[in-house]
Image 1 (tube, rainbow, N blue to C red):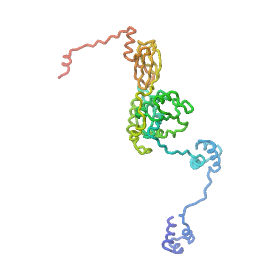
Image 2: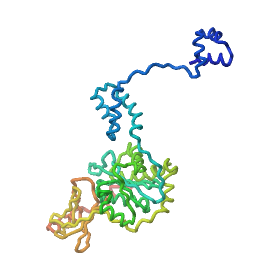
Image 3: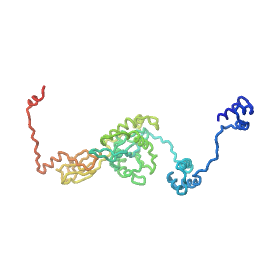
Image 4: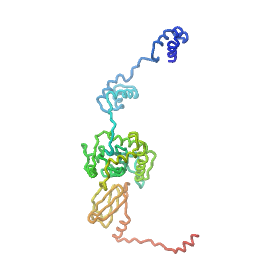
Length: 397
């Protein structure tokens, strides 16, 4: 390369003759002439060697056309059965060039949302089980939501995909955002989607009580919630690593602070702004929350058994034994469990809900009432009372 450039410089810049250039460079005159006539830099060329993939190129192209979504691994298995003995790299490089020609990728346009236009919902599953107390852990889910205009997001931890848990997560998300959008967007989650793009009765009732619209996305179309999918990836990268949790309440507290201090406070490249700063502008285009959100607690009518306990989610919670044989309405929420007598409206029990399993929770007042009804008298322990002067003598001033 250097000699080629030097020969051309001698001829075109210094005006030296071919004979003189050949003498100075110790090259043949024919070589000098070729260098002067050649406008492109010299490079090494050799005839292309045949590839081990050549006999199978037609089969590869046919598989790409006929089998939608076929993977590179499956193609390699099929052509190896037909005699291919080349490496994986050769095939992958060829498919990287061939796929765009035979299987054009889907393209997308940039979507712009109006303030308050829609709120996307989805489920995020933590990699590790969540501590729930008593040395136990449990598989959890986070009901995440994100506004389209401001990209403000939040999440609520639940322990099932049932409709009451999802509705509670949605209510909590709306309360965190502080306003109502026009439309709630969900994918085809089992508790939300009834089939054929229609909502379940419970989800439709929830939207009707809030007077908001809904949109059920088409199947196999995660790009429709692309903003929320990117937030899930951000949670995997920024929230989950190197964190520990005391229990599910600690998990929720850390998640709320992460959204407030990290996710919603960062500069978002998609909107060229910080989500928390655009939230106030978006709220002006949204309706206020109702005074009372739609109820999300599970309600069951049961009769208080002779052994006055209510079993829920593999745990037993005590009931007031005075109501044995009477019907009560059990109200099971995410934070507590209560029972109300149907005939009198009296409070029969209230317990903090536990997400551990195989536990028994007894209210001391219920235990005392049960012992009274059974005629058991508990003797109070006798405690000796000493005059204060005795303590003054023992403790120096």
